[in-house]
Image 1 (cartoon, one colour):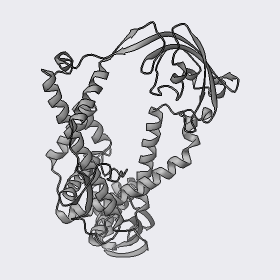
Image 2 (cartoon, rainbow, N blue to C red):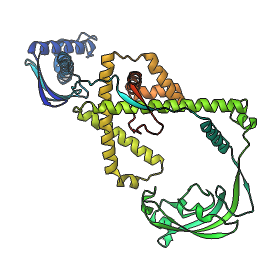
Image 3 (cartoon, one colour):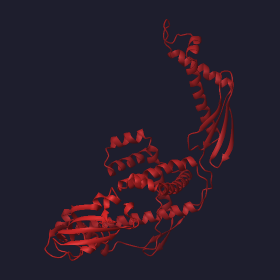
Length: 445
């Protein structure tokens, strides 16, 4: 078998393959014998049909199978022999094939980028010299109190922190809001709506204009919809609401005592306090680790530049667009809104995809150099973790992963985590005062 390789572009090669006529003839003989063993013809016992009859009857089928088998086998051997790290399915063309002649074809392939791996041990990262304080614990306990808040109706004017139960009807440019934004029915009219005064819930500035109102009182409230408002048809416009305060409710926080602790399945307030401190310390540790890893990723990515396989970038871009669209739909964005921002979504997805693909190649090269392995047990534990987190039965998740051929994604996740552990263990940590570490957005997972 003769193989030649031509560089078409970075990460793209043309592989020309020629299989000699003897191998072609041997493949025809082998496939014909296989057809002969399986052939069933009237007047002949199974497997005893003369070769000539089988060859004539199944000529096209035999030729097709020989062609497919020879190309697949020859392509695989060519790639292995030339030590090509192929990252996508080949584009096979220029096929010349037939009985009594050599097989020739050309395969255009995309390969992993070639680059010199930069130094990845001892990368610098700033870490905050911070610990969990008593004030942190107290703030967290106040949050827990707030989650058990109750409300009681009071006969007095609304004050900051109260809840106003209101009936409202809104207009924009002198007409009901739904005429400007057909999907914004909830912004147009509602009865029995709860608004917490003082925390900018609902629309910014709405609740503050109700301060001092009593139950039964009516007020006209004017708001400016922000430029980045979730309903783009209203962005930057003015809304005018006729509002009736139906009730005034004040918050009633439970006392910070053993009874509150038991509501959170702690034996006592002291045990609850200890648990809160432990959770805050774990959260701080995780935040610290994430900050270190994000800095290490930025540093590593900036130390080397190389071309990326466009098919890998395209695949990842489609994946990122899918995720962005899904996330926006979950937040209530309409198809029209997504269509309006499709260029911005595509641009952001492409940039993110290129960074992720680049990082993936760097991670893989480090894993190869450090001989980082991923065991079946580690993959099993990650799958079990995903099942618990997403409340999916283990059997269903495994079946879904097999159907989507997605276990490779789990493998990559575990591999990436192990390499990031290695980078973090070997990082050069520089202590910094609280609030001084960079807030990178790269997610290495």
